[in-house]
Image 1 (tube, rainbow, N blue to C red):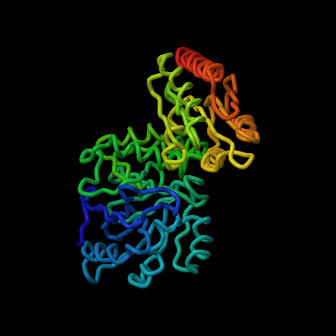
Image 2: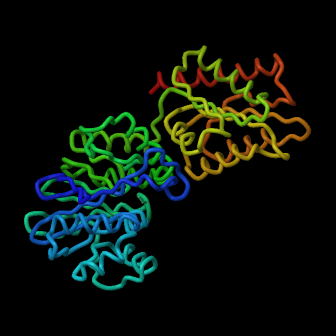
Image 3: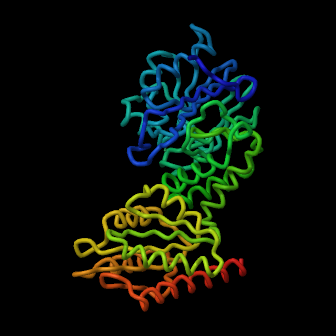
Length: 402
Ligand code: FEO
């Protein structure tokens, strides 16, 4: 189906909904798919802004031809970002539209060559450069590391539309509605946070630079390359990215346990109970053997407090907990407090590994650390509850002060 949707008078959404890919980047689950949003502006010169993942190329070409006409000319392709979920269709697109000129920056140039062997018909732009299409005028703003070094955004000053690529994007396909006023945004905002925290969160400092750089623009529509288009409330999605990239957290805690036979879980239960008794209502509980790490990272990004409870496995951390810590180290989170609990039977290991993790990052370690041999007894449970109370007390003080 040549299904395209008008975003404004002569700007079209040519996005595709991918329900076939189970794992984004072969890592992150997509229970409700993902979109690759591509946009076409039809003017005296026609421009396509970003493409789609390679398997969806035929759909994209059909849609372009349906808008431009069978012999219509596509003058420019703006490449905001080279990751293949957006650039995968470039090589074939050039064969279908031989007059096509590719617009990118100096970093894009090297990647076009290394990914696709493309070296010619390039228009290299610098930060702030513009391109007139007739009625429309595009401005290019470089936002390196949101998400790769070559990433830029494109602003159409005629329609006040910001084509932001990965920035302000999220998981979840657009099956019917594509605009924020057509969708249940509660679901999408949660998936935007899962996308942000797992894909872009590591580069929060660069997200902050990008948001500051874009502040002077009069933005009426935010049109990212994944997820909904924001036309009713474009400020909302920018504000969310701003808060998350400033590492702003909520007064709540995530309790994560890794437990083979339920003994370590009892320790986590005790901390969670104490947090609840002390009035911490936002409590999220994850069994790390069963929750995918992307959901755990997403929840940890939201909350001020983190409790990690792990059994020892072959003298060190329980493997799913070790995997979580690897992800957390990579995210470089700041401004959160942490409580740690470990258990062992015949060889210690888990608590020491958790302590090394807590001391190597930017974590505020809450006492006491608790270590239990085999199974927690009353005295151990009391210590776990003391940890929960201490975390709750400190957290409440933080939010009173702020
Ligand atoms: Fe959606 Fe970084 O690619």
